[in-house]
Length: 632
Ligand code: WT7
Image (cartoon, rainbow, N blue to C red; front, side, top):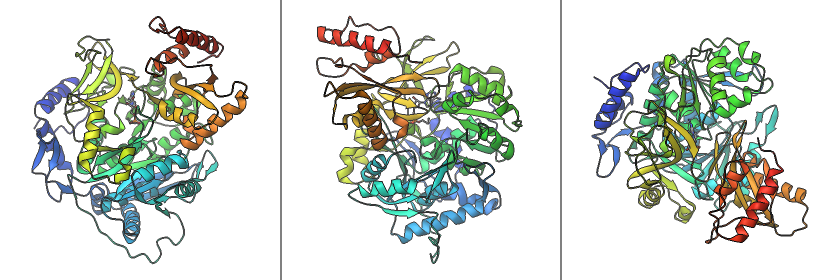
């Protein structure tokens, strides 16, 4: 059987063969791989072309697949090895213990009346309790909504309110970089400004589980049931809630994980993402536990108390697969190489990169210094919407190409199209990356602000229509990223083509930041563009027009930063704020951000296309202002 390829160290020839077949017989490919799921009822149909639905008739529980079945077979195997913020603080949780923890949390949720389809907010640090809380929701069919611990009370409140969350789970406290983080207070602040207030559960509160009657209930989920909602930013000002299915999602996350990283059950797997992002959902929680691996979780920052925390943990736990983001590599690369070299990293077999384009310098350091030239690097491209990895290189140590995301995963047909929507056929020609067919991991629907009044995550019809309009053109999924082929027709990602900014792998919209700036009364107008940054990849550059000409600029800058902290969180803080007299706009009043971006990046720009004299004057004055600032 061709799809029964246990070895994921697939060479190009085998890849091509499986890929070709997976495109012509997509349902057969997935039919083979659904066997890894423990079904209550096996689906009677893999893919229905008419309704574009996957796994019809399938019934299973995601938590059972990720934990219970392993708790039966390998009860004492560590499921999670957790390292705290301070060196040496370490805890091991076996599959059996994890199962017990999950049952406690799900029993508590049930006792509070939470049922299938209800939304449960999770605002927690990187602890086993956080993973257990997600799985407790999955166990009873509740939909979790994880909000990254770095988001402000306002952002948290917005997401909870939009998705009508019934309870919010948090922790009493957390530490990061040696400092306490007031996560519980952030939740209380969020609830205080909400209209429909969720009940707050502080998971590590003493006596919380005393006198609680354990309820082992496992909710059976069908192909129609959802697993979670996760907010991300698009081109519009307001974050949107991406909703993922249960069965289709776990199938896609688990299968991509196995192939892309060549997973075997003995792997010790360490992913440095946060559960607040899709990577933390698919490739910290769901896929690795589905395969019964031991996962390493780290609550602190890689440079506290010393810049070798990752390397020390890899050595201590004998990590074999390590998955991180380019921004972390760029930052760690600035420290002495000895921080890496003094640790024995020989257990590593595969290195992964995710979240943003990896630059050559960071790639080479990762390959040479961290991997000691014996670990292939998989540069994985995907999105919150795609549920799992879409592009990744082959694990071929003899054919490593820096900064190339490589090839589409089995069953996925990608394409690059140019501005006339014509398919790109030549290497090096840039175009828009699109996906031409359906895959199981594709998100089900999207929650928008306008839908809040309807308070529903299950009105698939309405959601779907909005969703289709936003992402699809002629049935093709528009990713929003630019890409090109290299000379071997492997795909290289250029970056976003829309108003999405990627700050240290955190996806935000420039319009969202502008809205936070507008909240400051004395701001008349503003424009935010993304510019390159040595460590963060990108950072916001804000142009601001003052209401009152003689207002103190330093004071206004402070208010702007404060407002961004308040409405989004510290991650969105611009590195540059400049005051200008006016902003260039099109006739219909749209700010010409692209031009501003080219000016600050010192790229070639062309103002001859700008028609009005007024705009030309504005631009020339902006060029003047910007030339005084040095941008790295
Ligand atoms: C955007 C999606 C992928 C999960 C975490 C981020 C950028 C992601 C890569 C990569 C170049 C990448 C894209 C994409 N991106 N991975 N390997 N190379 N760019 O998920 O927050 O939904 O962001 O991140 O621009 O569209 P996300």
